[in-house]
Amino acid sequence: MSDINNEARQGSMEIFFNGLVKENPTFVLALGMCPTLAVTTSAVNGLGMGLTTTAVLVLSNAIISLLRHIIPNRVRIPAFIVIVASFVTMVELLLEGFIPSLYSALGLYIPLIVVNCIILGRAESFASKNPVIPSIFDGLGMGLGFTVALTAIGAVRELLGAGEFFGIPVINKVLGGISSVFGLAEPIEYVPISIFVLAPGAFFVLAALTALQNRVKRKMQEKGQNVDKIQSGCSSDCASCSDSGCAHRFVDVDGAPGSVADAKANQKREG
Image 1 (cartoon, rainbow, N blue to C red):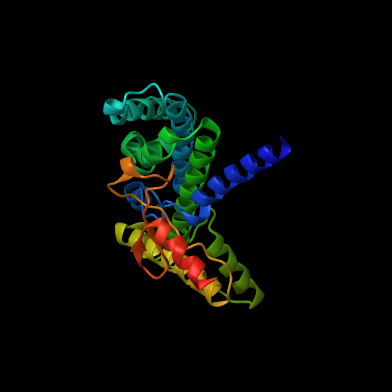
Image 2 (image 1 turned 90 degrees about the vertical axis):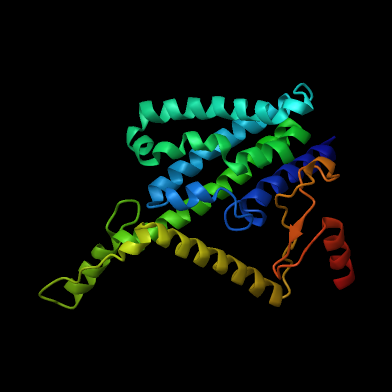
């Protein structure tokens, strides 16, 4: 019995870290780009949007998993949308009542969580095919992976575009300290690079962070470390997929598409 519990625990943690790192919805799967590019003008906005999406993702995954044998296959997508919309409405009302500043900053992008492809994608490909506990861990991993990505993008944009980090003018404080050390009459002031708080800056930062992640993966591969090449993504054959929770497609770090079975066979041959 203890062995079974350990295997279940390891499986749940693998699902969690899969969404957090290996299949990060932003840097790996490139999903949910609308809020990623629009609301990440600051680290606080990115963190708030990410945690809001995580709450909806975990709750909707749990309910959809519980109802997976009850919801008719023909109406599963409308049913998923109704479930997600219910939780989004609840979260929106809570934000409006208790964190009005964040509610105003996120604005229209809160109700748009209803049609976020990350949430609908996990509902269709994982929660509707798996038990409740794995579905919760899947939602938690994907949600926190999304949160980390949005917070990182927002932090970089805020730092370069406003000289602040979570609203604290850290760059000017550092420059002020340097000025006092060297006895400068006038303290050095940071001139914000305003493009980073505009739409083009979001693309620049997203591209840079994605490239950095791919660079780290390649360096790890060159050092002989085990880097999992299999990264599931969206495809048109989810209904016929035999692998639970996987879209049966992968993209490796060299950009070669194929099936999961082919990838595993190639890994065995390379080993």
